[in-house]
Image (cartoon, rainbow, N blue to C red):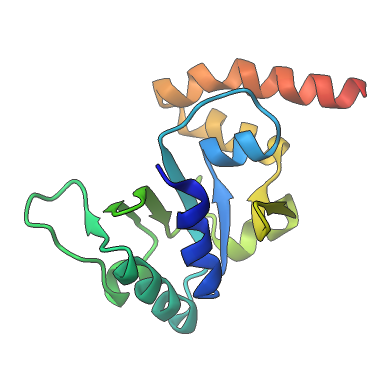
Length: 157
């Protein structure tokens, strides 16, 4: 995955998003690996238009559909997940996380940081732990010990 380039396309198109998932864990200092970028995008018509322009630039298609369908505004305005394959790697653009939690709902639990010269908003480690606990998927549960250890180390400092 060409993470910096993928983030750069989103930033250049002025997409409003929060990095969640494994990349958010890495941004928070957790020693994990991930093979995709998960974002929670703002679901306003203007932002979704910018997101569509960004994913069109990187030739995004739904990776779970063999018909190579490209995401459009109606796909991204809803609360569901757009699981995409792009020329820069895997991008999961989420309309909601947890139980119908939106971009606006999580802003209080985010911070802005710099990644390779890009200003990126990411989920805090505390909120990421809650999200992973709630999803309960095996891969998320396996990540929890590292996330909790990272948080404990940060709190000791």
